[in-house]
Image 1 (cartoon, rainbow, N blue to C red):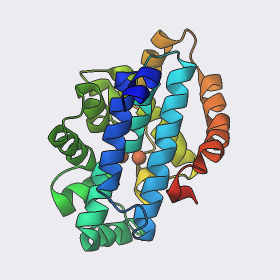
Image 2 (cartoon, rainbow, N blue to C red):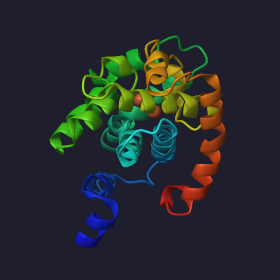
Image 3 (spheres, rainbow, N blue to C red):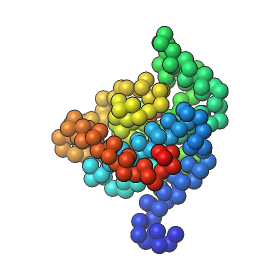
Image 4 (cartoon, protein in one colour):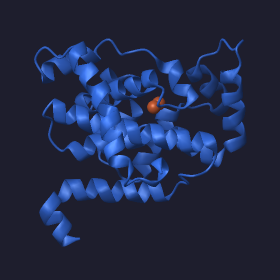
Length: 218
Ligand SMILES: [Fe+2]
Ligand SMILES: [Fe+2]
């Protein structure tokens, strides 16, 4: 471990250890829905890290961890309240459904998956910036600790939803917090749709490159 700290740096190792500890608490090969959730989470982790590198932001591992765990509240619901969670998804899949994902979640569980995620990460003593990014991944401009982190996760979540790398629920979040693009433009001058196209193209390649190491993609 001390060798890893020397090579990677303390924060990188801390992030790695925290992520592995959380992942081991959950089944990655449960129901079809759970598997889709993990695949989506991995893709958002990879994409957030790529976006951070593209923007030249420091401690890229933090971006991977926040992306990987952004929907941990959903994974928690899928694993610990599976019948209710499946019932909610069955309603979402109905062609006559008019209720948004968020409203259904509130009705079924009385709390959002983002808030469940925040509470779980608080319980596991994650740093404030990662906790905040998970809590506000659908409204990144409300993050107090690090809006860049929340924004990278949010944009990547949206890209994954558009690309179809997401469980059904995320298709109901195809909106963008209007403050995100101006915020990213502060981090990289003239950040625009070209940057988003670049990220979208690179994401498949990066997932392919890394998926050999990750059991959920095998
Ligand atoms: Fe989400
Ligand atoms: Fe998501």
